[in-house]
Length: 220
Ligand code: C5P
Image 1 (spheres, rainbow, N blue to C red):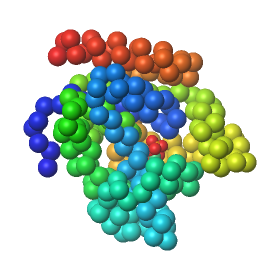
Image 2 (cartoon, rainbow, N blue to C red):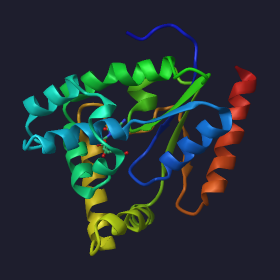
Image 3 (cartoon, rainbow, N blue to C red):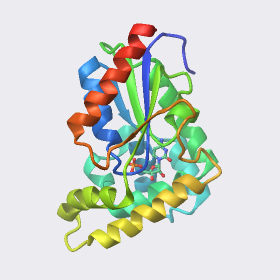
Image 4 (tube, rainbow, N blue to C red):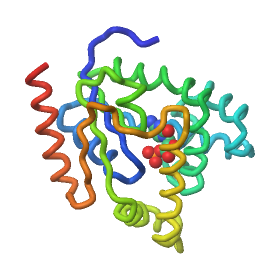
């Protein structure tokens, strides 16, 4: 389904709360590219499975939801909970779910919405599986403790009473599942630019990434 229309693609991968989403938004804004947070797709499938009263481990139910997936079936607020994050990482390990969502992601990358000349996709397997042809690939990471603190600051509004330890525990479980699965495990593409954001501000991460993208654009 992917057409040959040329589009500049920036691929960003990394674990939860590493800062990849912030970087993706900023790069997209700066270069005038469209942005797709691919975690939304897996969260959406996880949410819709739960909404049907099914178990996220139910492969047949998850695959059916993924085959009929569209972004219009849920709201952003529905998918930003710890329960949906857990369901997302369970359905994301299912090859049938991943296969059903692949075309959508590739189509977006190669045919960004009108007015955009490129696309920034962030997720877990963008540089390795979805867009191995990307102009540049980033792998963004940070220590589990720093990531848990960041995620806790976001989650404590929607889940009052949640502790940093609980969030850290959850993140570690999710990291292990995302990195240990057979289907598109989380790992840096061999040629990815690695940035550890543990001790960097969002501005510093952006400045570093922008320099690298500019160099790549000049060389292209
Ligand atoms: O990035 P976010 O935390 O929203 O992703 C939710 C879950 O979706 C991740 O834990 C991961 O299991 C899955 N995911 C994935 N591949 C992607 C993006 C997200 O497996 N490209």
